[in-house]
Every structure is written in structure tokens, then in C-alpha cells.
Amino acid sequence: MRGKKPKDAAQKGGNGAVTRRDFLRGASLAVSTGLLAADGAAVASPPESSAAAVVGPGKVPVTLRVNGQVHRLELEPRVTLLDALRNDLDTTGSKRVCDRGTCGACTMIVDGKAVYSCSLLAIEAEGRNITTIEGLMKDGRLSPVMQAFIDNDAQQCGFCTPGFVMAATALLAERRHLTPEEVNRGLGGNICRCGTYHGLRLAALEAAKRMKA
Ligand code: FES
Ligand code: FES
Image (cartoon, rainbow, N blue to C red; front, side, top):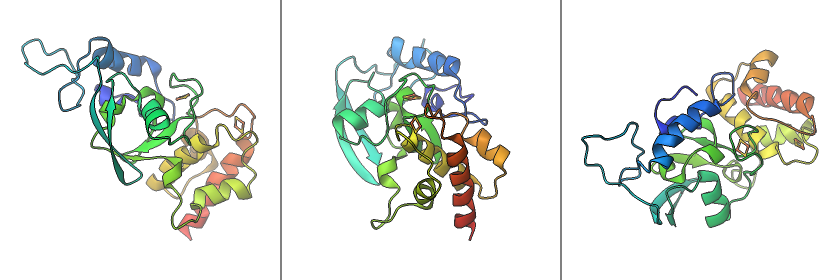
């Protein structure tokens, strides 16, 4: 992530790793100073001469499009996308582990990009297409990435697995011809404490082959 705007703050970088410093820089604008426009869009720089309305700290209406469904919520502007989904929508597939943009357990896909949802405000996700692990199944069938994770025994405790599946799904949506090194880099923003890296990298490569076929 090299985004200058808080809206892009949680996106992973080209090597899959998120830069906490960049997020904190963005968040300090969006959260600490409460610079959130009335329409939910984060203001990128202090509006010295602008008359942009400030919202919060109380609850404000926030509309989120999650897995194709529109949800109207009342949230404090400080609430992260991860907490909004887990606490208000009971959508708990994305896990809260480090809660600071380090482990990737909370990875969701927002407008086609893998993001750390613990590091993106829910209000910043308004108007964007949010996909969680719950949204990957179609007609009761596992997605190719999900199936490849099972077939390659790519999980132990499973706590990191939804995040890895989402990161691999975003990676394969961009490109289906991937070398092992590119898979390593693409999944480099996620951590597995059980050490199932061998299996999950095989799973991503196999999913790529199946999707190409
Ligand atoms: S819980 Fe979001 S990166 Fe760890
Ligand atoms: S399978 Fe346990 S943390 Fe990855």
C-alpha cells in the first residue's frame, strides 16, 4: 500500500505486505482528527478552508454492500470494517487476530483488492463491493480456491485459513499464471502460526491450474 488517501490505507502492497506506517498516517487524518465527510468519504487532508461536515463521534448511518447484499447500519465512524461485519452483521468468517494490519487473518476483498479489514474503517467502505469468505461459495459449491485448500491439507487450526483463501482468491483474480515465487510474494501479507505454508502455496498453485483449465 502506498496510498495517500485513508480509503486505500488497508490495501496490501505489491509484495502482499501492508505498511502499517502508511495506514497509521492515513488513519490519523481520518480518525484522530475526525475528518470524515458527511457522505462517508474520508477527507485526505485537513480542510483548512473547506466547509466539509464532520461526523461522529456518535453513530452515523453507514451502508455496506457485502457479498452482493446491501446492509444499512448505524455505526460510530471509528468502527473498522472487520468489527462492523463481525459484531453488527454476524459475518464472522474473517478473523480478528492482531487487529493491527500484520497477520492477514481479517483479509477481505474490497473492489477486487485484498485488504486488511481491521485497518479499514467501515465508513470508508461505503459504496464499495465487499467480499468475505462467506461470499465465495456459489450454489452451495466451494470455490476452486477453497477446494484446493482442502485437497492440499492447507490448514491445521484453520484460524488463518479464511484470510489466506481471500488473499489467494484476489491474487488469482488478477492473474492465473503464477510461479511459486509469485505465490509466495502474493500471500506474503498473511501469517500462519501453525506453519502450513507448504500446503497453502500448493493449494494456490493448484487452484490457478484448475481455474485456467
Ligand atoms: S487481524 Fe487484521 S491483519 Fe491481523
Ligand atoms: S492453520 Fe493455524 S494459524 Fe494457520
